[in-house]
Image (cartoon, rainbow, N blue to C red; front, top):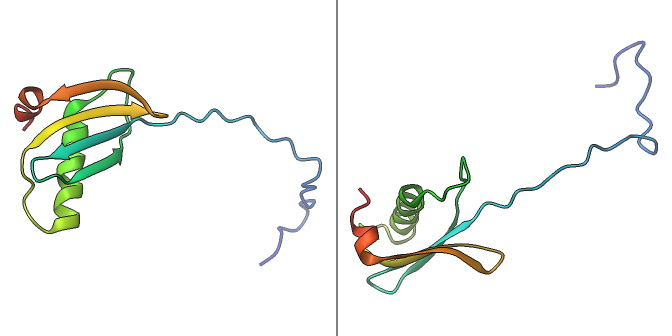
Length: 97
């Protein structure tokens, strides 16, 4: 390995770094009927929070950890930096396929 012929080496001291903006995805926190709690960072492709995506990821995480079918989710919420963005009750969670 090496650099390509005719190409000057990169001078890292003078390299200009592009500023990056980090968007921190919200965390979906779900409490299951058996007391198990899952916390999943959930990518959102817009400004609105996607309840269905959070529920599906929480159920998949439960199955992965316990090797059992998940019981109903009794309550859940989205949070970012410790601040609750939106809360959901069991009635809202039961209708998610």
